[in-house]
Length: 119
Image (cartoon, rainbow, N blue to C red; front, side):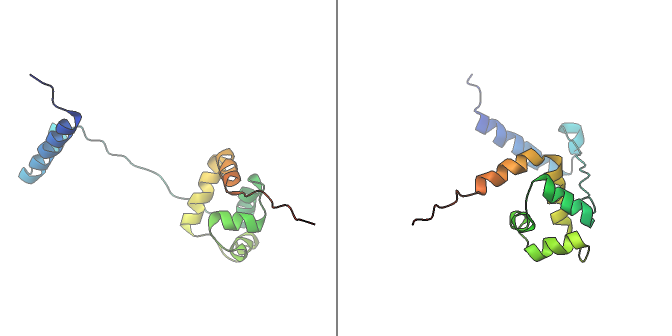
């Protein structure tokens, strides 16, 4: 007898799962189930940590702002303590601090070579 294709095995598994859900069966007794909990609470960024994060990439406020997708004035306000970053910006800065080399390399991908001026 011919072995079912991967596609057929996937469809069969999904149909079996759907049947179990429809009948109210305890799916944990029939299927392997995992509960994944992510602790993704962003760091609270005070002015000195924003600046430290920017400097670890070696960027000006303007370049850092462009990289984050915010205005230069926003980065300036964060670094002066006039405003604080939203949680999504904090998560992004957490990722930068976790692997700065990756983000330095990523930034380099965006840089266009400087155009030579003609005389």
